[in-house]
Length: 283
Ligand code: NAP
Image 1 (cartoon, rainbow, N blue to C red):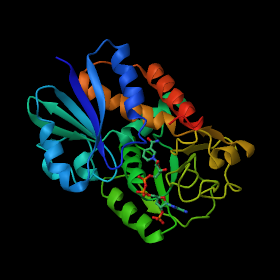
Image 2 (image 1 turned 90 degrees about the vertical axis):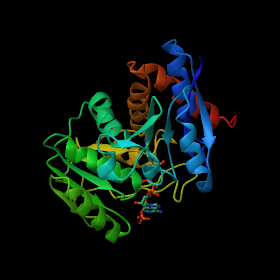
Image 3 (image 1 turned 60 degrees about the horizontal axis):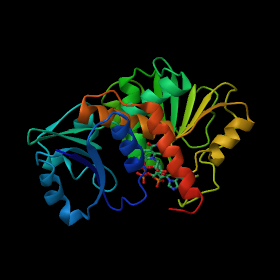
């Protein structure tokens, strides 16, 4: 029987997940198809209920449904309950389990692709939206010495810092534009620099005061090299783009659905091909 997995969101046409998950299933010889399940909000309960079918392994969940799916599931695993957001659903014999692999995917990408273990490190997150939230929880779980959150809308940073602080660790809200010299890692979690976003040429935080050797991470993955990363490179900082987080969150989801080790290199290659194809205007 051919099994199915899909991405639930609205819209989902732009998602890279079908390209790299399909390549991973094919590479591992698994008879699984990955579909785009565009789901407007009123259709969400029906869509989630359809995941209980025997041929469905599960789903990814993206904007705007990561929170709304929670009451439709049977159990929550990992940090998803505390975070209040699910990006991966697994169908186990008709019961639906929710997980969140975004933050763990970020930490896995840091460790594997930047050789940076956040344990004992001081990290600044710029941005306080959904992505920053998952990353902040995961950094606390990974024993970061400090997680600071700065955001254009300061109150949102404050709210997030209070909430994540309840999970342990030292989590603070900081003013945007403060001194950066005390951080080992600075992460752009805003949509500034994103192709088609609110400020594609912008840089979310001035980097003059960052120490050389600091790791600058942009979670924006389209384009793969953003203005923030280019500026960090000019200032002698180490850099990591957003594609690794995307691939590692997908790899963790792949492993939850299949129990098979994800072929990371195959997934990277397929995602890069798709980005290149789209940049060429073919998408
Ligand atoms: P979100 O919940 O909408 O949050 C957006 C964040 O960006 C907020 O902190 C917002 O600040 C800030 N922002 C937006 N426009 C801004 C501007 N012009 N100047 C300064 N700050 C601005 O979005 P999200 O889901 O967290 O996603 C954020 C980015 O991360 C997107 O580019 C997304 O593609 C990327 N992402 C990547 C991955 C990955 O796997 N690599 C995963 C998830 C998301 P305010 O609070 O002040 O509005």
